[in-house]
Image (cartoon, rainbow, N blue to C red; front, side, top):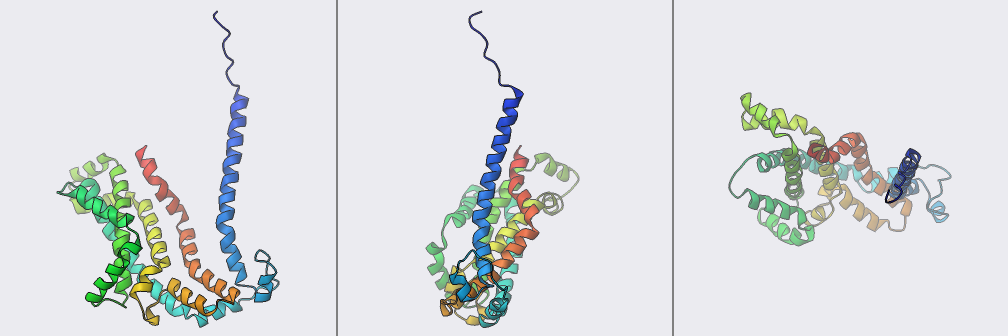
Length: 290
């Protein structure tokens, strides 16, 4: 023999390595969870405190849980108006953007037509271009169209930006679906419209629901479009109303913290309701590609 054979690692070694790697993963995930949740919890708790208590420390529990700051923030900031405006803007954006994104994603993924690559590149430009690059031309365009200081001044730009991402999102998902699924539907006599809505969309529900959650969060949190295109107080959305409210009550941190919690709460509720679908939608592309 030229040399002694190297001993292979024992099963105990692999089990120990696997256990250590799992511990490291869970520690990292727990650290990310703490860094994500602690700031929001701190702000939410500050809304229950008095200014004197807040001086004693931001991470301490309130001595007495007072809902006065939340009630005052809701009334003084006119959050009932702003909440209504945010709903009026967010719902059409989510519905219309979702329908248009499904159709355009289907077209780019499974249909052949001239200049498809060029058109898809234009959609990608809509994702990459920052709002600061087109907000001023957008303002003057809306003024020329007579849509400035209206709900349409917030809804239409949000739809345009959402469809750019939604097209990219749904194109990737539809392209990853098995081709036999579409072929079988066509053999059964389905036209392209029926293939999309009766066959593909039911199989893409995880991706569609994830896209809807993203559309809602982006639209609900948008600040710049509402700030530039809306000047009437009656049309302000929650993030814009919170900014003006903060400017008037800078010294009252608990009151501002209560307002910030009110604005962020719908996002958290929507995410928690669709958490499972959101996770499935994010990983569905990888699963279909395997």
